[in-house]
Length: 440
Image (cartoon, rainbow, N blue to C red; front, side, top):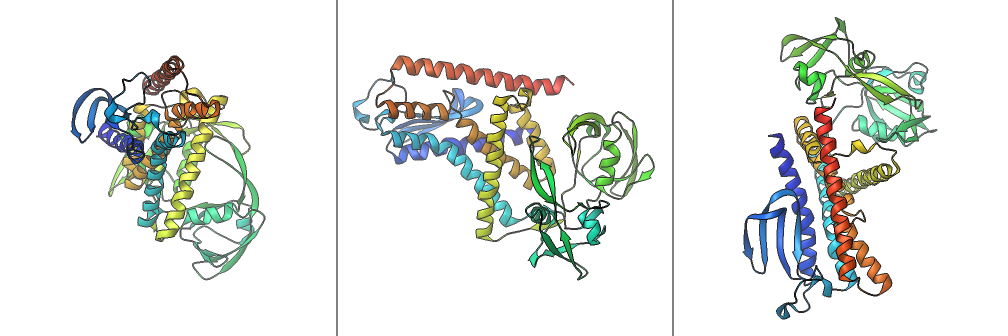
């Protein structure tokens, strides 16, 4: 089932990408010979009009074959003026860019739809307050629910987090569910992005209340091997009752390599499981590397459905797509700079695993994963590597600047180098995938 989900997701993303190339090529009058999902031998298909629409043997990609795309092709008088190479540089560039643009557009539409239909979040209820923090000094306490900030409604904890993060050094007047209005001075703090880079944000020292209910269990982890399942509630660990997800997670983090006895409530039935947290290195609040225990679980999504209007959802769809695209670009830059280890690069097997985890967490998580992978595909294809869209675009730019076409010999060598690089990259990604499975 996991493989089926991943194939469907990749198939949709590849189809959208190639459809972008196809539609803009047709719009510019280019003769399109073939529209293929997959590479290699043709398995099945049908010719409609001038184009052969087919499914090929190897599903790791796809292509649109345009007449005149390869300089060594024989000319056909009946297709005069319809070759890709006959078109102006801006027309050829628009055809090349249409594929990545289609993937970006898909992500925007997916996020747009998610914001309109609603996504689950946690209510803005405080679970813990750090001693000496702005929240403690203001009198906020566990159980307080925030309903507005400076008169603006707070729909969820994510809303509240964003408001606090965007207002360091300012005072927020928080309205609580019991009617109290509490002024809180937001302190300057530091937060890390997914790459460990730190930035200044606002913080008040209040933590979210999350019930200790499991939302997802990752395959191959201590939790998965022990038999934990989504929906299980952690009642106690080593006979110590823990009131929230944060308390349970903190208890586990402090005990890497130590066997722990979990008491689990599964649909009213009490189970006892022994799980040993794996040691994992993370970056602490002060930038230091620390070892913690992890068992491979995520909390259940919140029970508040957050929805936005049509136009507000559209804006948020663009904002979310821009946010993830910027992270993808940053990731590629850090790979080149070797700030991110090369073994973090993943291939199809990793996508299957991530798709399975996302599907287990629900439709919203799966659609979000698809949108993020679509943005990854767009950015990856824009890399200036021959055989990718970015490589074709680079050729067009070079020819536009020099005002002459590159020779067949130069183009052939360029494409051979690009193909070799692409194959090496794919083999390396497969190696990383297999290493994650077999080398622990």
